[in-house]
Image (cartoon, rainbow, N blue to C red; front, side, top):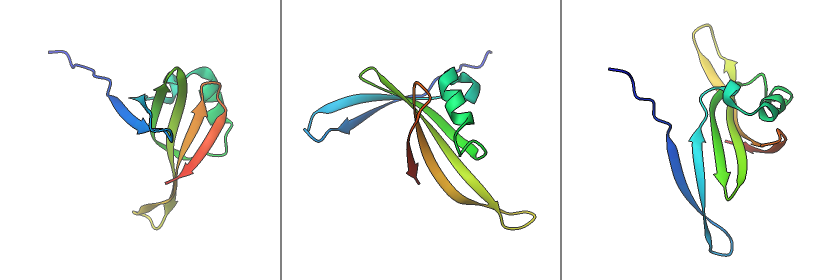
Length: 104
């Protein structure tokens, strides 16, 4: 039996300040090579490119597309241990511009 590949799509309802609701569709992106070329170039040229990628998501809201890259900087505490020194979520526009950095 062949494996069934399912793309996890999550519908997230967020509330605007004017109390209207908008739908945001978040889709997991498994590999950086599946990102659009401008987003890959933006990622490679940003200060966080040496950090480990924890996860990537594509967010679509009313025609606007953002890509979030969850990154972590690891700090070695000993020969067998590692700890996360810092964790951030990077927001890239579809043109590859680093739009926002959110500390986690």
